[in-house]
Length: 91
Image (cartoon, rainbow, N blue to C red; front, top):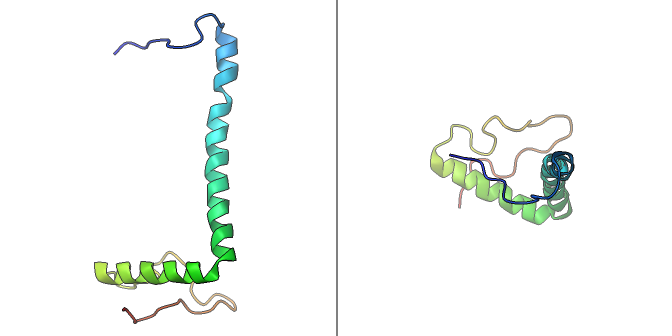
């Protein structure tokens, strides 16, 4: 495999580096904004969040998880937190 310089033939190396540098940070910013956006969406739409929890529980139950609904990934009954949505009920 041979690397080929496909663009910016007339621009020097420093200019290319300056154009290329922001892309790494923009990736991290995009990931952060999408993660925060999903959390805000779920916080603003509690019925949708509940529906997604029920779908997740059902899929985990059907897959044979020992503890569907938590799988050890969430803190249950911490402080005044309510118990998970759908214990032992699958439709």
